[in-house]
Length: 594
Image (cartoon, rainbow, N blue to C red; front, side, top):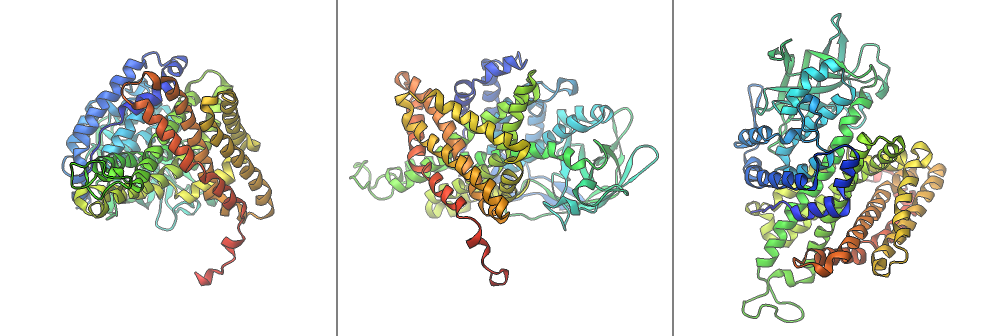
């Protein structure tokens, strides 16, 4: 059976010691977000996730969602768990008080969401998508739509979902066919079919608000002709009560490899009443507000599942007896040593731990930048934060989910044959996390987004700004001998990342295929460099406090940092070689030969 205990100590380390979130919160006007308040929220959130949500995970996977008569029934226990989540106000943490929210920083919500995802990834999608729809509506909807719909969404009595994909188009949304016909009263009639709509139908909330991409009759071809519409499952009366059923119906649900507790629906819109969100033909830009939020959330899913996998594998490795240590028996009173003594088991566990803690640090750093982007009074600081968030979003989405899947597989391997058996819970983690590499844009798309859009954006300003962050950190520690074992590998990786960036600019101009051939490796190089930066920051704090540490926390942090620098960071050299190898060997094979 998989186990989960919220990693509160590491979360507190990131928030209080690594990024000093409380200080930034005060500067941004979050007067109530003190360290004590942050800890209290996380501690109560941990109790909810460990004791209420996590017990629904395995049963939800085994039972899955059921579909009959156009209705979806979520697994047993989901409705009670959702009500507990909703009534506790957990969906409103970072929402605007004007709509019933608590007005807390996004960063605090992000750390709670990691716990929720670890407890039950499928379940977490329902409130997660509502939060994403809230983000899009606050940015683009009219005041009338906000006031009518957002209070119920913030309260969790109504849900929100995003409706993009059609059977003939996934990433290439310029091909979508769903139609929107204007009416004299300012509303529209939406007709079409969407697929892969997570939470499109469920029994957790009394209404579901669909944000649907569709085309107006006069829309230009391609992605420039897409508008976004709010289409409720039930129409809403003038007094805010539920009205008659709209022309929205679930045709079926998908039977999936994982996240079986999340309903993945085919949604049919037949002359459904909807209202435009944002400007005509600007729907894709409006939807990106939701999509960018969801992409960071999906990246976090990689971390959340990797955390459960690591905790479960480490616990198993301490107890499972198999063989003897290469240097002689470590537990001579037992018939064999626990497998934690074996170097290869430790390799898999340390790879996992180094990823999890590095990812949590980077996610906290970026989450705080999101708060800066939204709240800082200084336009230049907002711009800087926006640049770094935009650059890191594809890195978090793609690298976190690639590594989340890799960690879950490694931790299954620690269990050996028992990991392959369903009763231990490891194979569910492998199945659940796999979708994170696919939805919200397949990871290859995000690698291309990084190299084709983000690198040249604003004349290269985003990546130059990030190099400034790295160079500034390295310069501030250039005379610190104790930090050299950590800053040295980061300096080497930063130099390689700069070389790769310059090479891409030249080689991409000569042959565009070079960009596509390098994209995956470039994103991974940037990710490892970013992780190196986070681990160096973590080591700096740990070095200062290790001497007075009675718990072993800081010694463990230093040991993991050293492992990352010596065993993982050397990959950056090979990645640079792969990037600069170009596209010739990749593109030379005729398509017919595959």
